[in-house]
Image (cartoon, rainbow, N blue to C red; front, top):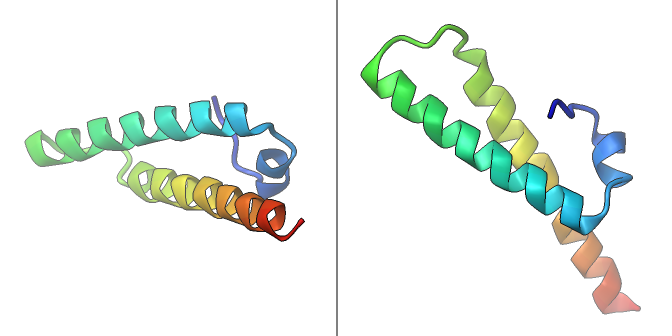
Length: 70
């Protein structure tokens, strides 16, 4: 699943974010292994996956903070 826009991530439910987060972490793990064993076709994929994980975690954090203040 290719999701790059932050606005798209914000519109998703928490369950959808969890699924994307899990998939992205697995992909990042595989890319790191591949980077150690052989040369990556596109090293920029590592950076993209890291950023996507950071975006998702940030959105989850903001959601939990807003729920605590209510």
